[in-house]
Length: 208
Picture 1 (tube, one colour):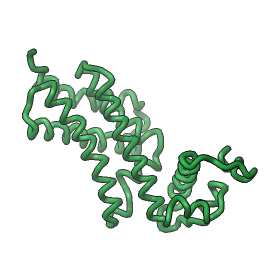
Picture 2 (cartoon, helix red, strand yellow; picture 1 turned 120 degrees about the vertical axis):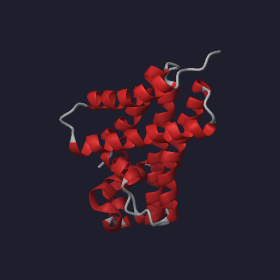
Picture 3 (tube, rainbow, N blue to C red; picture 1 turned 180 degrees about the vertical axis):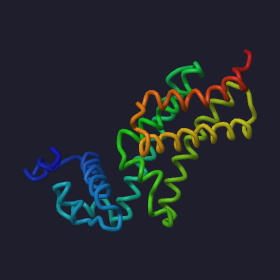
Picture 4 (spheres, one colour; picture 1 turned 90 degrees about the horizontal axis):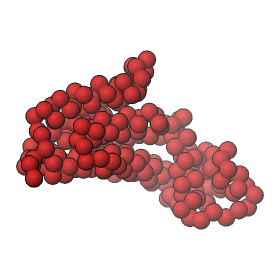
């Protein structure tokens, strides 16, 4: 049980944002262990150390809770990608930083990446929208950077961005599931080198 859950049992009232974070953390553990369909709100409330009424004050139902958790993971991934792009103005470093953002995301929390990339609820429109945003927002951020740096039009820059995102996602997931005998650093370097030889060699920074 988490420290926040122990505080709840002692009658300590948490601010709404902290309570919400606590409930999402508990939900992540339950969803990761049981999957969406077998997870129960009772179990999530117990994991968080709160009553069911408290849980329902924040999330009207299990799907609402799942979507909120999924959205938080998507926000995390997109933030990592944008942070990588902003970390340097040297595109030779930007490419591995961006690829590394995807590898960090899948390696640090397997439950998070499975919700985003392998959700079994894609038939739910709100879930599909959140899953799509993980790719579209990453592509948009990279497109803006490529357009500004290489002077390409939007269509060409977006195609390159889609390729980099797709390569990073698939490579990171494959590495996690099948090839962890290779270090994360080596896997990132190999993937980034493949991407850089195409982007860096074919589309150098524009003059001026």
